[in-house]
Image (cartoon, rainbow, N blue to C red; front, side, top):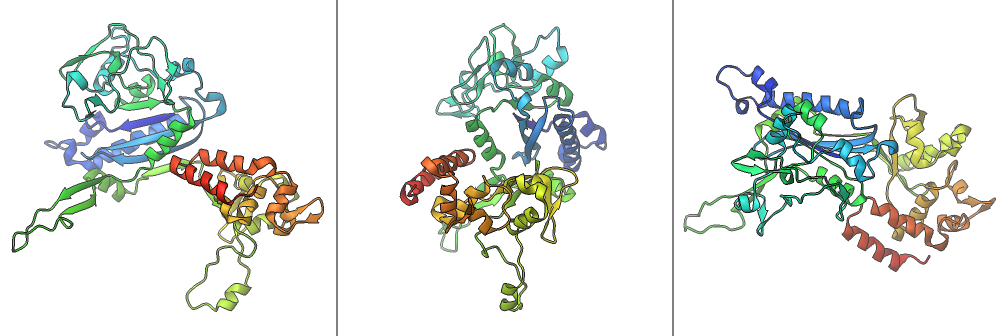
Length: 427
């Protein structure tokens, strides 16, 4: 589920804190403090009070519009029991219609104030969203009697032709112009909160890319001729960061710009005696090579040797039961949770790739040799061990490689990976 939350300068909390004669633009410190307070409240409602269902994981990022106001994008991953799968479930959480003005007058006012798009297209062809004669956000949407799953991975929400309309920015708009929202959140925070269902991998991949798209930028030209009146067309173009006063205050206060839960621990992947080694300038390299250089992977083997009960846990699941200490060892976890992810390996990397295949399927190994031992026979390579275990028989490992990459890779990367498999894989 995806939520986009935008600041409203007319919030009562902002105006109550202003001095006589001040406007919200004069006090970016108040604007960001109020927005953060509401953001923290909303986060608690979503992740702890579970108003939309039990949230297993989330990620959010705070951005700043060109005019300076902060807004946040939330991506919620729900527990399997609370995932919205069928259109009938969408309607319980999300609405894309004007509410009954007589039955819900306050909600109606807020929808008209915050959740109406446009006008654009024939009503206002000069609107900024217009591209090649049509709205880039595809408004106005079509009327629909029921919610259905769209072909582009996004739902087509219910927008009934019920004659409900409102006067917005000089035009009369109906349900076709309503931005999808959750009535409870809209009523609670009185601001623009766009809530959408993203139940397919296509939508999730797009949203993760959108969430981490980077900082705002601006481009401008500097027209300054030299003594002879010539202009350097290269130097005249400047590509720069755009930092507004609210963003500056947000950073000065030390507020978080992004957060994800649970945290993800990258697990290193290396062949024997090929782990990353750190040392100080001036250290004797012979001493550096001779001393113990433990890594998460080598200490995973040590932990399996020490704790018999841990031998049923895969390397990627180790952070759920253990925590990695600064002294470079795995300690049994007392509280909290963390997700482990083994760093990726390309099929062209040979044994390192097949080591990852084994670690993803074989728990309890106590050394690299133990991992290569199958039915009491020490194999010459990790590939041979994977073959003996049946992990790459009938191209299973290649299917898993492509299936896993499908979850996060963009089309260009997937095409390159597929070509690499065709060229380098002999399975």
